[in-house]
Image: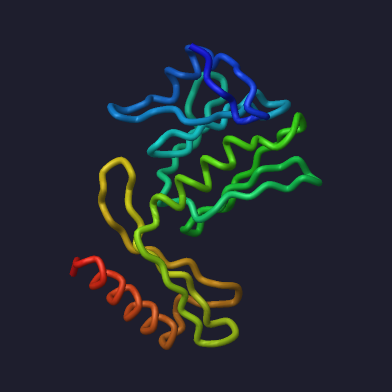
Length: 176
């Protein structure tokens, strides 16, 4: 059965070796994918996570609640994915064009994992994005804080405001 790849919506087959390397769990479905130019790396989005496969082996597997955003640079023909923790972003090159379906799926899945979010803004270099995120595979809720430019985790005023904001978010959805 052909699936739509992430590049221009064209219909292509995903090789059985790549499909096997994805290691889809029960209830997990492949939603979109694209093949990186030059490397042959497959970047795949499932309903639970983002996975990359190279040479028949999974390299990256990140649940949607671990990803803060994805972006596309037309000039560089580069897709980037940024993580909510301190991991460096990952990038893939697609010279054949923007992998629209894959990008759209990444945005939708990341947003689907956000239960509630609120910015904490105490002024310059004291900004943080807080959120309650859902693991789309298990339903487990976790707290997340992404610091703004120049913000420090050891800033006591910001840390207290983040804690109060996360407590308020948890209260809004009825969990302690």
